[in-house]
Image (cartoon, rainbow, N blue to C red):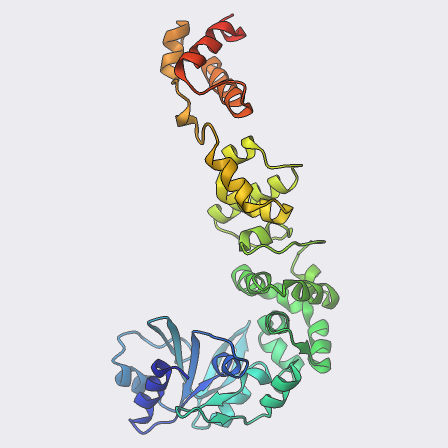
Length: 360
């Protein structure tokens, strides 16, 4: 356990309260994985947590606090049980003084492990057995858990994918039974979970599980062969979906999709889309990154501003009025330069313009 995390536990315990790290951080320590998301549970009430850490922020709807210390994203919550849900959000909670009670509200056994400041493991629900067996098992009644919060359905797939675990039979059956409930989830939450699946080198297992369980159709996803790329937008470009993306993300995804339909990435592709998009598409198409970098580096022009004659100069040269013809001439110059038929030097450009049909 990192000293930063240990000191947070010590700070709470020094005031007479219990405090444990719980969930993914403990799980990943046991799996030998490094993680910076730290969930801490305590019997200290929100106002007491605020006092201990001199927090100016108000607690969230669950009585918890989130803050960063260096690279760590810290969440501290008071022991609680969730009495009533609306949608996937608990709208009625009750603070409790029992770690056991708090643990039971969590999603999967492998996320129920706790650790104290001395590194001692607290395994109330035999989660370590499931960790050893590489099993994703719902805590308690799987159907009830998925009805309470349908996001847990996709999270089960995500954990099976990223950890390369198997989903326990009853949990799998409940996923299939309640798969339609994921339709109630927001696009942002679906995107967040699917992005974690697509970011994993083991992404294919996640895609296969989405297909096998019927979640693929429920989430309005369509894909066949998806080739791995380290760029997440490149992964999303290979999947038809109804997810909401930012304008910048959508623009990049659309450009990558367009390039993937092309037989090759040529000078025009590099000029029109830029190096980043071409590198992403190129990785999927099996084109060597160094080749693309070298070709982009040696492009005769990388933007319209690089063309060594301006629209105003063309107007003066041909003694014409501003019109679409000027744009047509500039676009033709771009084409000839990128094709290697014309050098991007003013004298050559003038000679070409004067000697071509543009001067007709």
